[in-house]
Length: 247
Image (cartoon, rainbow, N blue to C red; front, top):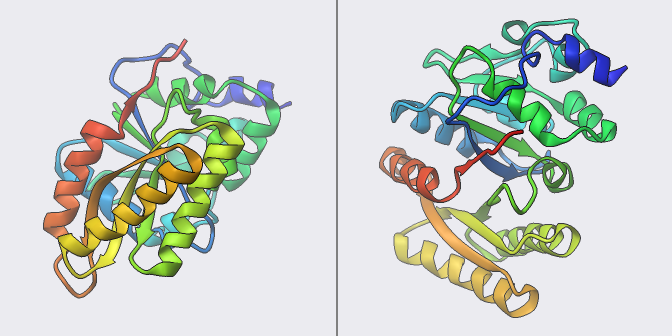
């Protein structure tokens, strides 16, 4: 039933990969805030990128865009809706799909992730970066260590360190990831951001034999985050946007 639906889906019907689609992978839980991912997508768009966001985080990222979707990726996979009926577009041209049910069904089907990614690559919209936001376990089923560098939020402070380390540990010990990049949030200065990153990187290297690099940092509100977001977007384009090789 699922495979038949995937074949019928208008948006995912063409599975011949087109060049230029890259992947950014964000392991997030329903309790995590999705605002920074939405802000990052806007910054990518401002740089001339064409992002498409697949949100299976419980809707937190979608809500951060101010969108209220009526449909899910599953509706497209089953052939009930077309891409432009399921995806909502922001005023600046970012396409966002709510995908909790769709990702769960796709993972359960056992179909290769390249089939899903190839569908996005084949759309006429010309997307060049696909942002996946979902729990770590589901993310690992779609974006393997060979195809993704997970981007993890690191809130400054002890609780943030514990949460980020738990995510790194889950992906490292459960799925074989050895490289990560973090975005430090809530720091009062670049020095504090680097210190928070250093604590996480040291723990990950010592106990998990993993490398954690710093992609950038976002200052604590109400400080202007626009310059930091622009710098972060540039950094992630060059370090965490992994070109997808689709067959």
